[in-house]
Length: 413
Image (cartoon, rainbow, N blue to C red; front, side, top):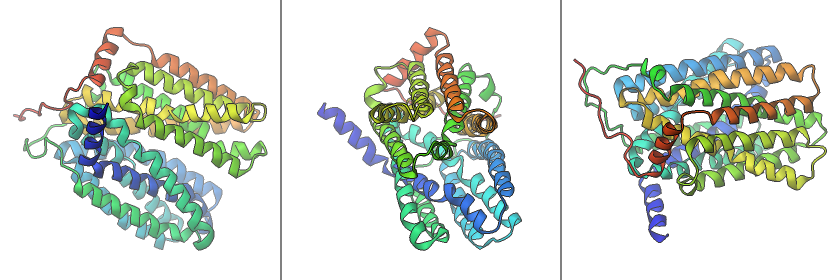
């Protein structure tokens, strides 16, 4: 037991910049992005213009994930790409803070999304290389995501009432600068500089035997999570609940997510990857089901289902990210990681949000939530499909201390 704790502490200390990057990234995301709609409204934009920019963001997500991943693979320098992207983000935030017209604010918002949305995927790739035989500790580093997000929400709640929405710009710049510092402290990819003329066989992203499962699950996950939870505040307000009650449920879910990521080294050897993914969808469906019956269920049941539902992200993203790291060759390893953002946010989230909003317009709100809970449960059962032999291999790979990327790409002729 003490030896395992020592290995866990050693892995954390040796790779602390990766953990801190996630903390600072999600702090910036939480205190800035959710309030941009209010800021745009303050600048005179109509609800239609704001809705157009939000729709544009999904298109930018696809373009960013596809191109940023390709550039990282082509140069074999994902750390440098992350550093340059966040340096550019600093300039974009300054540009946005000075912009006043719809055209300039829209351009700044698009550039902000382009430079930031895919960088966490590249950090995942770099972290997996660093961990090598200790990939079972990968989930612990993802604790930085809920911790950072919670810190960002608290900071926004403290800044906005006192200093107004414009105070978010310098705060976001500070966290973005810290992301640049953490990126500079990371180690560059092992394959950097090994091949002069790098080829990026993107077709392997489609022909790999695990591609359909990996990106299919990510699309379904984006549909499930964003579709229901993006309307959480509106739904709870329509049901007559206060924002404090909604915030309490979100806090309970974030607590579950943090604990689940922290316990991943213990959970991974026990639960097979596809079973873990299925459990993620099941507990998320329970959380959405509790929202459908939020007026009927006792609070302790709602709190329990939200706590378990918060674990869903750890149950889905951890095995999928590790599966990507083990399934694809180094020549496309960055693109393979960023493609999960294309499937998740670019495809799944956009369809899920549009469908939920359309149904919410003419069906009872509780009925829409209940329908989504059933859909998510069905997605979970579908995610369990697959050949048993392949799952056994994946489970053994996740549990065993085997290096992820020891082979380097051969020189291109």
